Image (cartoon, rainbow, N blue to C red; front, side, top):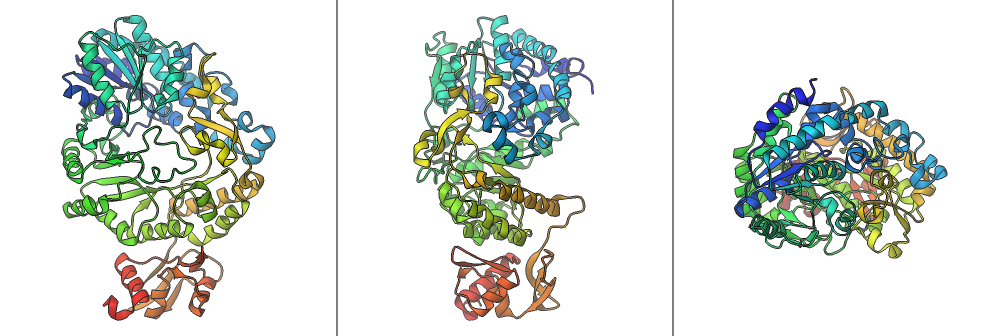
Length: 628
């Protein structure tokens, strides 16, 4: 691997064009995603008559330290804030990797020694990175940063801004402070999710050389700021406060040309453009959250109100994306897909054929026909807000769904071939240990469904009800993660700049931590069955076997045959959810581990090809003549 000064720096001057504004996407965020926010502002600037270029400093750093090193930092434990630590020496003059680098993976600073030891005995071993290797990589940032700043200053951009989301603040400060020092006339800007609300005020209180901080949705304020600043009358306020956009169709279509050109220029051959994901949005806010805010969710900041693009606009913009870029993958940044799209957008996407691979976040109360519709429309992966398989926990979260609905969605997704990304969370204020014990008993029966990514510990996040109405949930002593004190300079208002917090509260999950450990082990075993070397995911499926209905079961549970012939009526009953009555057929299915009782409902666990599943469900509910 050659260093950046011998390769990437040689092409940086060619990549950078003369412009009125340079927007920088700094480290650390995942390489495979371009910044939707930066490219939206680029398009808005163009509409205002300003020339804007986007520079992917994160791609430049990956070229300097290598993709494996870059991705190691991106994928490290959130609580360590390693992405911030990597630039705190250059941003604030702190020690390399910040204060307490040797303890960055220790839970004890947030939870105390006793609770930390009980939470996860092998936490540090599993999450630790090679500190010496990271220190060597960090030592290479001096020359890298000077080359980047040299190239920026040489172009003489009147305005230079950075976007900060995830762990990009220290890198932004390191870049902008040096640009300002070298070129005092340059107007420096910082915006993005890490600047929203009180966080923007906290960042404004730190001496960084940043002239203006954009807080909240900034499309309108940024356009106005550009016109005024380029006309010579810069606004006086340091924190420029935005407001939620109401007309989504008024947004221009972003261009991701800068991203793909720089990906090829600096990482050509190392990261295939076809493996990237174009970021796109069809809505903002959360239609469920504006009715009932999930207790742990801090994703929407100050823009919870739901707004969506028209189906016509979405189709037109997807056509542009498909024609313009080498990737067919589109990552929808929506917090939740507009429910109206099942009537307005998805049927029209299905008519066009599956030309794109779409990802959407969803609410989990989806029927089989809607899951099938998504697949036909090209939505091949979804992230439903499952979080728990216990209705006790889901009610505590205010999710608006039951465990029955979550399990039925897992089942429908497996039947339709829609991939799922989902998590199990634990450690909620006021939760009951029985909820986790119930889940642990269920998991061995459902290894034929796609497994969760993690069994994750709850974080208290800014903008969540746990944060802004703690007393209502029994939450007290809210404090920023200890790592924030390691990565910001002395005197910074940590309670303002932090997004992730810990707190004190009663929790059955913490009290019965052995159950959580058992859940983690079970999920690890489940994931190995799906994703381990040579793995073939287990099956529990009703299908046709030599012309007869059969239940195929490869879960390997005690007392369950791999093949069991069924008559048509039994096959239909084994596929149909309904209120539990305790009939002989239901009892046989429970004994066979082909169903469970959940929230008073008989919940079948077997899947089938969607056409068969719909036909037999209909027959079981309404009789064969109706099905015909």
